[in-house]
Length: 119
Image 1 (cartoon, one colour):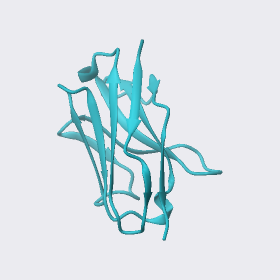
Image 2 (cartoon, rainbow, N blue to C red):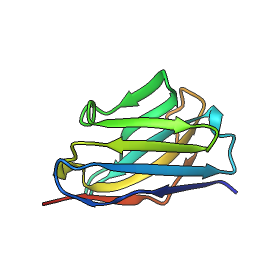
Image 3 (cartoon, rainbow, N blue to C red):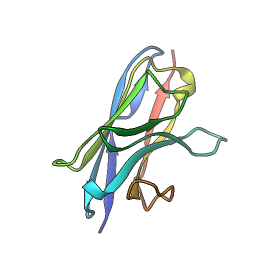
C-alpha cells in the first residue's frame, strides 16, 4: 500500500518560514519525481516545485528564490523549505509522486497539509 504523509503545515506571519515534509512508503522512492502542489480556495491545484535529483529541480516562478525543495532517498522523504512567506502562499499543500523524470501525471497523492500566512 502506497502512502504519502505530509507534515509541517501551520500558521505563520508574513515573512516567516515553514518546512514541509512528506514521508513515502510502499514505492521505490528513488525512481519517482517528488513534487509539492498547492491549492488555494477557489483556485486550481498548481505545481509549486518538484525534484528528481539534486540537479533536477523545478520551481514555479512565484516561489523561486523563496522555496527550496530537497529529498532524502534513504529516508524516503521530500522536503519543502518555505521562506519569506506571503499571504498569497496560503493554501493546502499536497505531496505528489510522478514515476520517472518526464511524466506530468501524478501517480500518488498525499492527504494535504494546510499552510496559512496571515498577520
